[in-house]
Image (cartoon, rainbow, N blue to C red):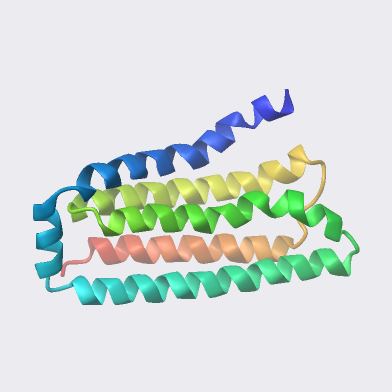
Length: 169
């Protein structure tokens, strides 16, 4: 029964990935789209920004994961680490898959709209997970201040991205 109860949360992670995979496969075989992509003047800048953001996010995620692991180790609860961090460590991989799909999509407007929706929905899921997982597992967050910092950092990032997309070019 416990696995069945967590199925909606699992679907919240899997459905965006399946949708993105469908869109990527549908648009990936369009030769005209690839030709237009290679001729686009912002391709190099966009790729550089994507790689810099991806590397920066990876470094920040690694640092936060190490901080959480260190706090578990310090309290002697290292055995609980595997069960409590599984979902949080899967989120950057899911974000990369969705972002990569949007990178190679020919339609930038749809990608921007969906990125905003998935970003704010992801923020909601993250806030819900910070609240629900400790209650479900009858425990407390290992580093509540770090969780608040991560949540605020994502909120600030999404807000800046929203303002940046709304600003005239």
